[in-house]
Image (tube, rainbow, N blue to C red; front, side):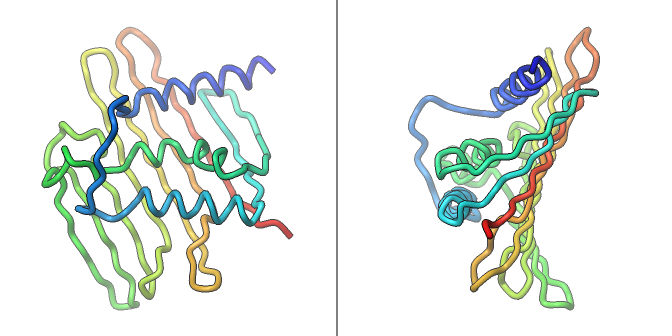
Length: 194
């Protein structure tokens, strides 16, 4: 039980290290609509009554949790991905957008921060036949007290012309002055209801 409390507390702290504002955010359509994607996934998965199986690891401690989240709980589960939204008024022009194609019909859309001032350094969306297959987000915060790095990934499966979240992961490190490095990971798999 103590292990679960430590893991949940650590992930809550890590979420608090993400940029959050108490003021209302004015949304823009400068970049790919990550919020729309996440809201759609939360609704689809809750409506499908999908089961979430996740493994949380902080240092040497590992916990396994299984649940069937409702829509609000799905949004909470994906909270760190929501924090990576770059479609904000203050971020117009802060990211360079690059589109790449490969021979197999695949495409990549990459948003890269133009400066180290942005904690979301890069978001990469991968498409096959114009359908979202995966996304990857790199976040880094650096100040006098700590350096915080995380990589977040999602993969999707296509069903009836829609992308459904298949799994996601969040891994990273936190280095604090005069403390040992903290390594953390979350690996989650979505199981559709049968």
